[in-house]
Image 1: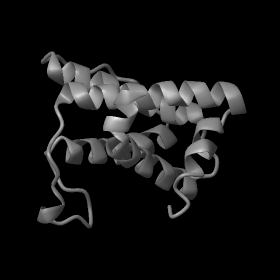
Image 2 (image 1 turned 90 degrees about the vertical axis):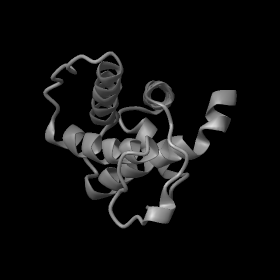
Image 3 (image 1 turned 90 degrees about the horizontal axis):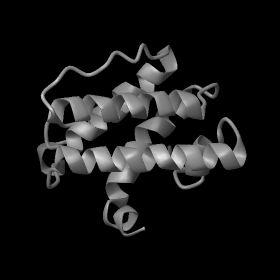
Image 4 (image 1 turned 135 degrees about the vertical axis):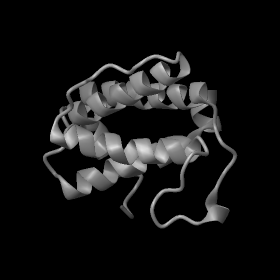
Length: 133
């Protein structure tokens, strides 16, 4: 639980683009999000190990999630500003291993809430905490 407290802002940042896609696509489900998050974990692991990431052959919905979350992850890694951000919005960059751990935390949350509440269990759980999306 300490990890979640320390990185709460990062976890919320990662969940924001997921909720943006969910709002636009009500047919999005937890599996689509899980596929995107697993791909990103592999992408950053591959980068850290200086190897090529695997091709996950993501669905169209998963690609939308992947792209939004990757943009936010790159921002939190100090690589790029997301759309509508300004230079002053840059935060202390995370390491790749910290980002991977944040993505793994999201992955675990997806599994937990899908088991409890079905195929959109995670999406609906997070939605309660992001009513402004």
